Length: 292
Image (cartoon, rainbow, N blue to C red):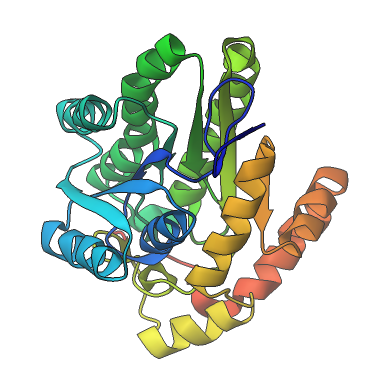
């Protein structure tokens, strides 16, 4: 239905003109691109990230181009940080249409080299960060009778990812959380979508990004060369396609679309895809770790 220039669903959700949206992990990469595209489509966006200066730079650039954006420093692994973020957004805007639980880190390398602290950190950010977001947003959306929770998972949450076992573990969890939650809350008017990017041109392609790490002797330029085998997509192109898809309210969004072939193939023949992934990563993963 239409309300002036605003597209409004039957339950009150705005797509995307004059919607209030939170994006975590918004200082760079996919989060920044999503924030920019949301404001281009008329939303008011709260950009949240642990990198406060970079996050404010992103928000300032959006405001300079005529968009509505505010930055907010938040550690998604801290429940109180996320609660304050969501509550302050709702108090100011009077509504919460979208929360993009997008913040995440990558930790890669041979499984034997990952410490317990590595596991704790990636679970805290990639799983508990999503849980903290939905726990804070869900009560508000329930009272409103509308809202859309979008959780950034990965194609690594749909298929095997050798060399990124911990990362893949967390992203499989995000997919399972999202689809189960979608089934549970659909009758309340709340939408839930798992966003599953393939390779996107961000800092995580080599070295795991600002807060991630990769245990490997492979030089960064070689890591990038390996990543090129998977045809990385520009972040702004990804954001446009992702928001087009979110507007249609699917359970799972896979972008670029060719990754769907790998996902479907894995569902039909897990062994075939596992063999393919082994060959694809080649010698980038040592056959023996040096865990000592």
